[in-house]
Image 1: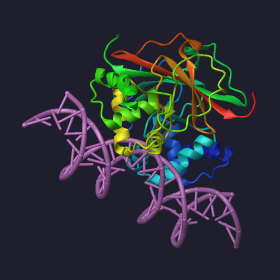
Image 2: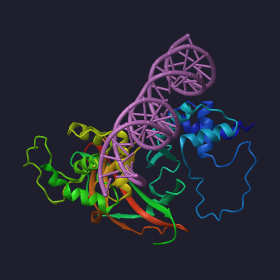
Image 3: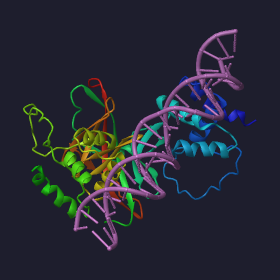
Image 4: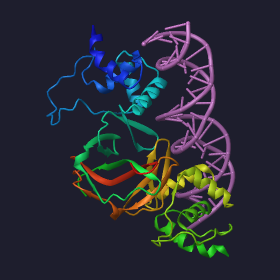
Length: 160
Length: 160
DNA sequence: ATACTTGCAAATCGTTTGCAATACC
DNA sequence: GGTATTGCAAACGATTTGCAAGTAT
């Protein structure tokens, strides 16, 4: 019966040429669909919401794997890696590299930047229009700019 | 006799509280001192030099290790890693993270940014004053901005 | 003399791969 | 049925660690 909720996700996968397998759907749901499936619904109410955007997640393969297993949707870690890369190539995700050793995957694929909390390794989106990049030097001969990443690295402690 | 050339490097290490050991000096020389020690001097002449800055290097631990060995200054890879991190903590180097899996170390510790050639994994400095960051959002409560990294990712191919 | 450094080899971590079993169209 | 996908376990590359032997002050 919960099947019906997946139709949108199924469409989305098909559109990018990926077969909507059980594991891809489970991962897509965790990534793109904020509402829980059969876990206890988290109490709503806090969140003085500004933007109504579904939910921007910054997640590692390991974290997503844990979530899937925890949600009763066992998926092998190898498949999580495969899927994350396939989603990224398909433009459903964006890979964010801020720390040596591990990659984050961002469900927000619009033009934007990041705060990075070095203390706890958490990422926070900065809307693209909230940073103005002036005087960007032109790309060197024979290359083109594919993307500009701005990472504002934060440490604990107040002001200066 | 070549000993005399190291006095400046020795001072530099002492100033940051690191004993000037043989291996740290060898690595410091490779990193900070452009002129070769006893290898055939590379033909000068090309380089239509704009700024006279010694030499900005973007190097991985593995690369530096190879250079040291190749220069007849064998240093263990573990020591290269230790040293790179010590130099970084001491403010002599800056770690640059652009690719999952490996870290680059930048001898330029002034305020600046980077071009990153995704094709060949090479980095190129962008002087700090060549990019204007306007409207930087303020750091979230309880944190302070430690650094802002701008990475201009380049792909092969001309313009758009 | 003593504390700091080094090098080795093993351990660790995140990630990738080969390949047989399995699921989708 | 045929191809795409999965899962496992092994392989991998970069980096780190423990610890005995060596070195700077």
